[in-house]
Image (cartoon, rainbow, N blue to C red; front, side):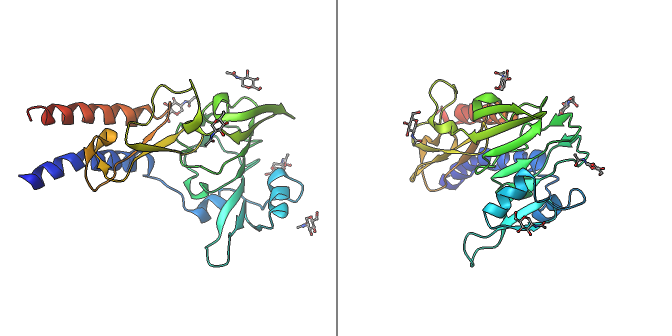
Length: 233
Ligand SMILES: *[C@@H]1O[C@H](CO)[C@@H](O)[C@H](O)[C@H]1NC(C)=O
Ligand SMILES: *[C@@H]1O[C@H](CO)[C@@H](O)[C@H](O)[C@H]1NC(C)=O
Ligand SMILES: *[C@@H]1O[C@H](CO)[C@@H](O)[C@H](O)[C@H]1NC(C)=O
Ligand SMILES: *[C@@H]1O[C@H](CO)[C@@H](O)[C@H](O)[C@H]1NC(C)=O
Ligand SMILES: *[C@@H]1O[C@H](CO)[C@@H](O)[C@H](O)[C@H]1NC(C)=O
C-alpha cells in the first residue's frame, strides 16, 4: 500500500520528464555538431573572436572553447553562427554553456521558444534587428539596436524580479535561473512532489517560463488529477 502511493506520487514527475524529453530533446545537437553548423571559423575582428581572444579560449570552427581548470573538459563559451544561412533556430543545446552567441546576418524566420532554455551563462547575444531577444526585452538588462543588429546584454535573473512573473516557486522550494525568461523550482531538502507539498526523499524538478506554456499546462493537469486522487484521505 505504501509503495503504491509512493509510485503514484512520482508518476507526474516522470511523465513531465518524458514529455520534455520527447518534445525538446528529440533532436539535440552535440557540442561538436553545433560548432560545425556552418563552414568557416570565427574571424579575428568579430565580437565572438575578440571575446575569445580576451578570454584566452581556443577557436574550433564556429565555437570558442575553454576549460575553467585543467581537470575539467573544454566547454563552449562563445558561438558565432553569423552569416550561416540559418532560417530556423531550434536546438543549440550543445552550446548551452555559452556566454556569447552571434546569430547576425542570418535570414531567421523563427526561433523556438525553448531554444535558449538552460542557457544560464548567456549574457550577450547578437541577432538580426527584426528578431526579438529571447524571452523579450524584460529578460535582459539592456537591448540595443546597432548596425542592423539587435544586441541583448545581461541576462536578468527571473528569480529576483518583482512584478514580472505571476508564477512563483511554491513553498518549500528554491528558485534558480534557467536561461532567458526561464526559472527552475526545485524542492528543498526533505520535500517532494509537484508543488513540493509532500515530505519525502525524491525532489521534484519543474521548469517554468512564460513561453514554456505546454509544460505548465501538462503539469497543472497532472497536479489536478493527482490532487483528486489524494483527496479521499
Ligand atoms: C588575431 O589577432 C591577434 C591580435 O589581435 C593576433 O595575435 C592573432 O595572430 C590573430 N589571429 C589570426 C588568426 O589572425
Ligand atoms: C557571408 O558569406 C558569404 C559566403 O558564404 C560571403 O561571400 C560574404 O562576404 C559573407 N558576408 C559577410 C558580411 O561576412
Ligand atoms: C515558428 O515555429 C512554430 C513552432 O515550431 C510554428 O508554430 C510557427 O508557425 C512558426 N512560425 C513561422 C513564422 O514559421
Ligand atoms: C525592446 O527594446 C528595443 C530596443 O531598446 C525597442 O526598440 C523595442 O521597442 C522594445 N520592445 C518592446 C516590446 O518594448
Ligand atoms: C535582488 O534585486 C535587488 C534589487 O533589484 C538587489 O538589490 C539584490 O541584490 C538582488 N538579489 C540577488 C540575490 O540577486
